[in-house]
View: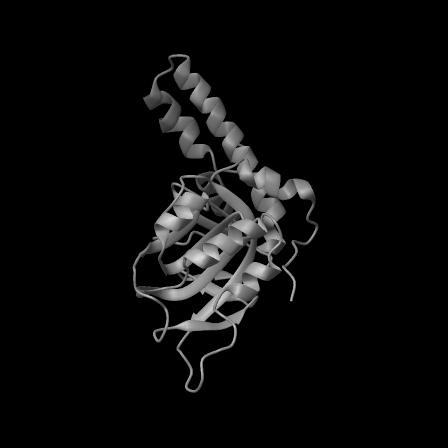
Length: 229
């Protein structure tokens, strides 16, 4: 399997996304009337660096009966990832067993993966931090996945904190959280987010120039998501 592609994608699309933040993207989805792609509860565990890229998915589930799998969880997605991709592990929000660990972080870094998002727990956090790999998760635990849960599929549609995510969707994550952009709407969302960011920057300039913050935020800010405002 290969990593997904974004319809109409160009090399500049992810660059444009990386210049934004999660708040602008969330606001843009509200503005466009799209279901919000905010994955609630996920936070930065390692380096405080924004990530933006295409999604490579891993689905975790119950450990099947019989001999263990010959391939370790997460390895197929890492090896299929293109530089700049983001590995997304759907682990049913479990905090009692890790869905990602140190050797995977090392392999992802060597592969050029821009970051990892885990709907669940991560371990070997210090190793990922030393590697400079951004990891976003619900939390951290020393508990291994062995005997507790395992990968049951990869490069498949998943749900992350209740948000539907497909391979080839885009994701942006920063200190405010994680937002997924459906591939078919990515360009519209990014365009709208750029408009939101430009308007907010203009309001920032007015505040820096001494205008009353109450006047700025009580009128223009509240209308920022309205069409044509």
